[in-house]
Length: 255
Image 1: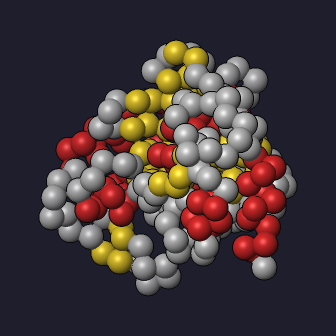
Image 2: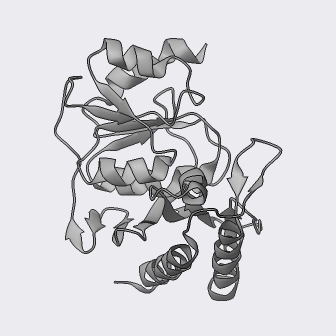
């Protein structure tokens, strides 16, 4: 394990321990005015932990985090979601993860996703494959929409009518309220795809490299490539085999 990956994995483990210690029923939370999503003290603590560690270890790198950023002129940017899935985290159900990626000129070149409850740590580096707890993983081989095909949609509010459209195609949908948790399952071959509409880069940067290094595909909602160190045009993450079908189905819903 090289020094940069070791740094990211170490932060993931440290963040996971903080999440485990603070995961409980009846958690205090505040609601953000801009999108009416919850934020907890744990989100803020982990974000600060990672931002401070990046500033100390990589002072010439930029940092973009959900709960605070340090933007400087640099070709390298660390992109972090301290808790992807704050809704489930703050409401007592365990579908949340830590997410951290390193981008170079907007391209994800390293990513880590950590599920602290099941102790599942995924990592990937450009051109080196994707791994779950040290074992190489790959996406599913499903090529058609069937009732065996599960797609994560992020909830009705993310893309209206998507669940109905997919149901009409014969596949099932689920919603974890954590697109990165879904991406963990896509990369490990358990889900065929996930669809995400919002513009937050920290929800996509690690997903991009981990899913693609597992053999899948990640694009914006229109099927195009995009940068992952700034606002995004949502994303579709898939096993690659159903990707174009999803792009075609979603296109009319974007109008």
